[in-house]
Length: 294
Length: 300
Image 1 (cartoon, rainbow over the protein chains, first blue to last red):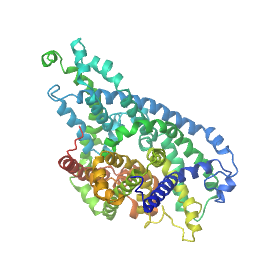
Image 2 (cartoon, chains in turn green, purple):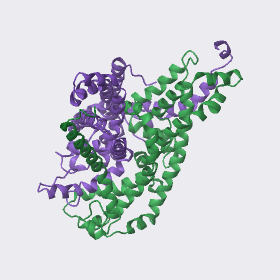
Image 3 (tube, one colour):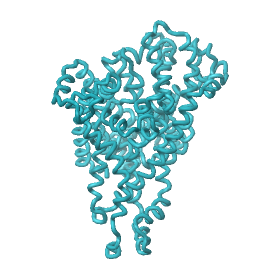
Image 4 (cartoon, each protein chain N blue to C red):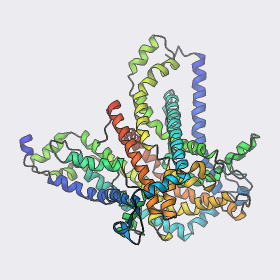
């Protein structure tokens, strides 16, 4: 093969490398640009001089964001939400996936339950009725409004039940002979050997809860209950829209807090960037199924 | 073994599933019942059971709004464009990545292009509003530097739908390559060997072996994406649009949100939502059915 490599093949290989590397670079550019803005001096930013490297390096905007009480409070709401939400997701996913991983001849009602969960994927009552149910149950302004409506992530259930199905049946049978029931089999045998797949689901759930913003916006009436992403939505996006519609009166204040917004964006992204290397290890396994599900 | 299992009662299995069942019952099935609001002149003070029943009036009102058809059209147009571009770009990247010999570069490129997928549209929206701004944004500085007219990506109604498609590709294309790359790796290597012996070049191999080998997964992802035609990408639009681009960028999801939770026309909003869920239900069922028939795909 190597000997037969023609000149045109070599040219293709080089072009391909250049193309893919520039593509990857372009993907990252916007993020690098915002990062550079967050560390730059306001004067350079307003003059439009900041590209991919900070100009007039300083950490003032970060100091400002970190001393902002509202920002910190919403960060705390998010942390609470992630901890409660991810544990709820994990517990429910495991408890649902195990019975559903059984064959129908072992567990007759499996078909019924599978349909119950399946139907929620193909039909939904829509935004307004869901909002009203959350309201009726007195969950407005409560952290559980951000956790319970999405407490059963169907995709994770599917991932988990397929994982359970792939495990050798003999493990469980041995436990049954020793007199164990399903509950012991699940918690003593299945859960411990499913650590990798539980970790995958936990990472997905963490990212989902960290990134969720819309539920906070509608289920929380008081801004002090907003999780971070909802808070960012209101301070970054909504103000920006106002700025855009009155573009001519490019407000000087608005422009000078670009560095600050950039810092807020970057801090809001940081945890994702930190878990990202771990995600890389885990997600490809689950993804093939996940992307197909879209 | 079957004898041994007889003493095992499946009751614990029912108990395990119960909490999850209660949660989906409350937050998915009760709202499904809540769609009766679509047939009522709903007043929150009177509740679902005492509000006046008005039959299809909400739907008639919905059909009388000129915005409704525009919004449906926008949603379908944006979704279809996203589906088409969302196949072509990731498949191309997957084919090119497959030609990369060095696994270090391959993984490096993948790591970089997956990243935007994990950031929320709030974050990406914040970034995009900054870099796409016509006066101060990074992108328009480059466009201006090339001597071209600046483009108001987020404020020009002609550009907005394409901005949505492009920025969506930025977020999702890398991630979508995973599934196509997996499909390429599952192709039988001996096919390439015999093709090489027959004198087929790399391009011919890609065209006659790799692409046909990926075809089942391409069909599957396309079929499954049909179910999302009335989706359009709520999170993205909500964080990028403004009244200036409602005429081309408003989609069903954002329309329902404004009708219901901004204007408090609960009945009409639920009616539009029901229309969306109803059509989506048909499309999703159809797509699952087709996926099952064509690719033997099953969810559970």
